[in-house]
Each structure stands twice: as structure tokens, then as C-alpha cells.
Image (cartoon, rainbow, N blue to C red; front, side, top):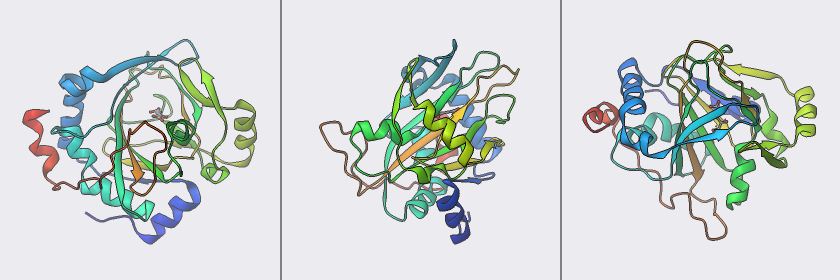
Length: 253
Ligand SMILES: O=C(O)CCC(=O)C(=O)O
């Protein structure tokens, strides 16, 4: 595959995100959907959270690589090498999560920066990135991710509890909305949004008839220490698997 170019990196540094289309093909996405619906990893780690708006956001989250399709995707050269290019340093696996935003019921996500959470887990620097893989078509109607383009340049903002979620201080969001353009990240299945951990993002509830599921993989710079006793990020370079590894996992998803 082709990797991100210097122009893509410049766009990422300016905007805080970059979308790459068709990173995963139909068969790979079908395999991931199969593992969402029938796999043990997702079934064993799914939890519900109040979205602060009367609905539930459902997600499955884990902090270890293993021997399954999720690990094959998390170590895919198409993801890991692009994360290395964007961070401009070696990367470590932090966590993977499936976000369910089911048709008709899926809850909203409050405005936040991921580093608003991760700072409190002890990460010293905001040298962290997420790769958001669309498993279904993500549109405005079914609650696609929304970002404030360039807002990562604000640095880390204060966050507090909203329902079971952690959201950015609402006065700061009002101010930021005047400073930065809102971008609706509409994506086809298999496309990937790489985004900076200080980029402000949110998503609406899903009142449509179409699911909006995503697999999000989060990476830390290997050289970014995690202070304190919690060691939730791996301390070795993220392995890079063969490009064919995802479909080879079909039988053990
Ligand atoms: O998938 C979404 O709509 C939002 C997820 C999100 O913001 C997160 O996991 O940090």
C-alpha cells in the first residue's frame, strides 16, 4: 500500500486529523463485523455508559494485543506505519475499542479531547494518536464523528463529568466553536481517520435506521512516559504484522 505523504502529514499537523479512504477492503470489514457480532473479545469487554443525554453509549475496550482479528488490525502495517509517520517516532499499542452506535438507540458522545482523559492516566506528553476505522457507512444522519478542525492547537482543556462520560468544559467548547470549523467526518466502511489526541471531537445520537459502528485503535509514542502506577500502554514497540494477517484470522475471530 501507499503510506501517508509529506503533504498528508502537513495537513494532519494543521488540521489535527487526516482521512485515508479504503484502507481495508470489503472482506476485511466483513470479517471485523463478524467479530463484533460473534467474537469473544467484544462480548467479554462490552460495557454501557450513560451519555448524559438520556441514552446509552456502548463500547468494548481492551488494552492487550492477542491472537485475533483485532490484534491483526491493530498491528497492520497500514495503520501502525502511518501512525509512526504521523508521530514521527516509534509507537506503542495503547488500546482498542469498538464503538457501537446502533440504529435508533445509539447514544451521543460529548465534546472532548482524548488527552483530556489520558492526561489523567499519567501520560506526560500529548504524543498520542487514534485511528478510527469505519465499519459501517458513517453519515451525519447516523452520528458520524464531528471534529473542530485545527482545535488540537489549543492544547489540553479542562474536562469534567457529563453522565458517565468525561466532557470538555462547555464554555471552552462554545469559544472553540467560534474559532474552528466543524467538520462532519462522513466515511465509507474501510476508511480510516487518524486524529490527534488534543483534537476536539463529538458525535450525535443515532436516530436513523442504520448502525454506525467503528473500531478505534489508540497509540502512544513509545518515548512518552506514563507517570504513576498505572501502566495501561505497552512499553515495547507496536509489532507490525504481515498485510495478509487480517484475513488469516478469520477462523479464530
Ligand atoms: O465513535 C464516536 O462517535 C466517538 C468515540 C470517541 O469519541 C472516543 O472514543 O473518544
